[in-house]
Image (cartoon, rainbow, N blue to C red):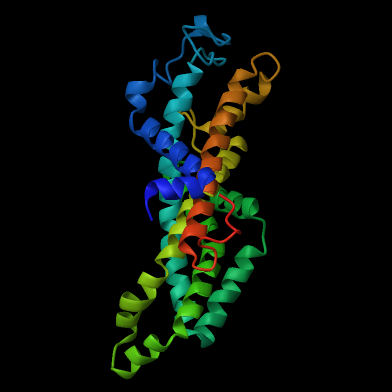
Length: 282
């Protein structure tokens, strides 16, 4: 299936991919693209409206909003990738153990997952952050742990479907050990759902980090973060300087939209039941 055919069949997925490529490029080239130092305070430029010198205006400390939004893309990508890596690793381990072995292992792990999912996600994240404290690493760890439960359920379902196939029984009959079956047969066949989980999880992680920063539990200042830009002075000066909150909000919306559309498209393309069918949404 050529890339041109994919783009024609899934235009929203292609648009999401382009948005993500733009986000990645912005994060990588942030020092080059940003016209100003994102944390340098300049009192004489405080609360300036968008102009030729400051395309997106300035905040209450005189810092350039465009530069902070550009550097915020780097923080968001770092947080998203780190959190998704942790949650996917934990979810894959739990999902494989639970789905492949079943029995008491499955019961114990799934009851733990049920307990974690019984609480609202934001409450879980706030509890973890209250125990760990602020910091970039702690935010990544909290988001990774918070995103494990739902992903583990998805991976477990995929493993349960694969475990019943005849080639698994043949592998057992020929004397293959469990780790060999998992490495050779289980993991390759659950790669597609894992890829979808990763793609969708990036958007969720960026949105969750924004919520934590908005509530004051995210990345500490003066590090530029989209969520932090929305909170604090962004709320205080919403009427007087709306650009302080509007542009970070647009950046968050575009990033989450891109990851969600790409994730939906990948799900439709990689799932044989949806491939080529009318159900595809992106």
